[in-house]
Image 1 (cartoon, rainbow, N blue to C red):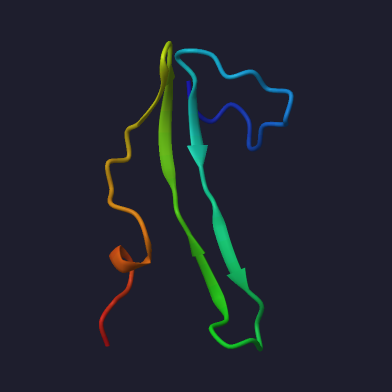
Image 2 (image 1 turned 60 degrees about the horizontal axis):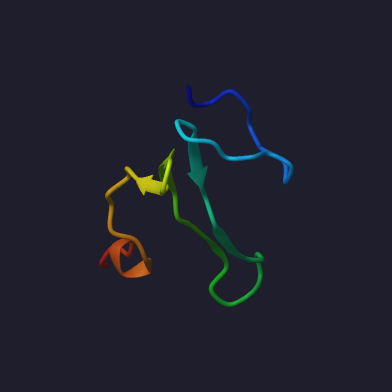
Length: 68
């Protein structure tokens, strides 16, 4: 089941069958050059031998910049 808690703490032990969301984010404060934010978002399913990323979307800024 996904979505049981908003945030997990550092004591949570990952077990096979769990679903986790990885959301690293970079923020540049307002008033600074390049102000704004960028966030990746991946959904992973924990298995016996590791985790599988089921998002399958290419990542990195080059995939998220719109032409002007």
